[in-house]
Amino acid sequence: MQKMILQYFILMLGSISVSCSKDNPELPLEKAVYRNFQSIAAFEKTWDSLSVIADSVVRKNQMGELWDSLKINNQLPFAIHDTVVFMYKGKSEPYWAGDFNGWGSETTGWKGKRIGNSDFWWLKKQFPPDARLDYKVVVGNSWILDPSNPQIQYSGWGPNSQLTMPEWIFPAETELHQGVISGSLSEIQQIQSNSTNLGYKVNYRVYLPYNYASTDRMPVIYVTDGHEYADAKLGAMTVILDNLIYEGIIGPVIAVFVDPRNPANGENRRMDEYRANIRFVNFLADELVNKIDENYKTLQSSHERAILGTSLGGWNAAYTGFHRSEKFGLIGIHSPAFDDAILNSFENSEKLDLKLFMSTGTIYDTQLKATAMRDILQAKGYDLNYIEVNQGHSWGNWRGLTDAALICFFSRNP
Image (cartoon, rainbow, N blue to C red; front, side, top):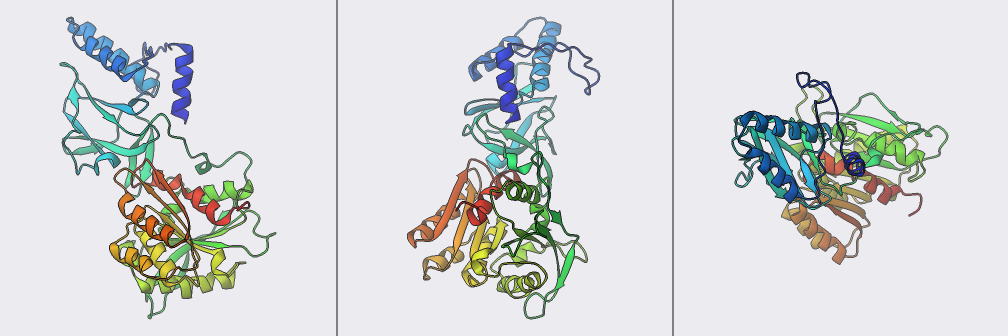
């Protein structure tokens, strides 16, 4: 959204001149005069015309000034409507890898084309006008953040560059709104699962809304991959809860963030816990739920208890709802990594007492299985809120849809 506003502001003013030293990247750039391009064709034509200037010094200076103007005005990658031009400055040929090509699983058609004999490279692609995608630039054996793009989205493996197409809307609920009173997130707590279920210790943290002390019993949402959902750079879920609760969009809610990492060595156990593991489901339903209910002011009906997860965690949420609907009646699913077995389970069973939220991206995400599950659930008459967005399999996608799941389950105006 900030990028869109900046583009509009620049178009209204015409052009901007900024003086500075090129030798210090911390300072504004010398003669960074932004040119107003009304189309991708005009953008390309300008670069092509500069690339054929006979005087090499003039050519280099003018191409450098255009590059500087685009960078300082946050116009790279350069996008208009549904078309974007990625650009890179350097000696070696780059290619682009990200949500849009399976992170390099498809390399054909993603290499940069040199502009004349310059050190500038570009790649033109089309995406939906409201798409948002993570990516990196690959140069040789190095996967790097795009040096020309300040936009960053964090993943579970660190930061990526972020492409935002012109009609993408920034999820404002992921930043704490002015005047909002925050709830509290506990220190790490621990539960020892019994030998019938997991037989090991599990860490978790508990979020309480700002008005917990003055409120009667309230619903609970259990969140797998909780350490990432609660991280402001990843899921930002505590911030989203703060905003929605304080502004009265949802009622007060307790959130339990369940950490899949081994407390002893940090090993992530999600691959085992979330993949159709009834022992993990029973741990949640019979051990963790009981402990939370004993220690907090909770509503204990299945209709007031939710589980939320992403990817394998989304599979786990559906699996949990299928096997323990008497405990978890609200099922939140982001980009589910379903297999055929869970689809068949819902298709071949009687309708369960469940309300579901499910979302998926449309670009190298889980759309195929998600739509198959959607069709099954709708055919059986389930209460389902289903959303697709033009994004990939990333936290940038899921953090922007967490409010939708919370509103679906806990809205003050259902």
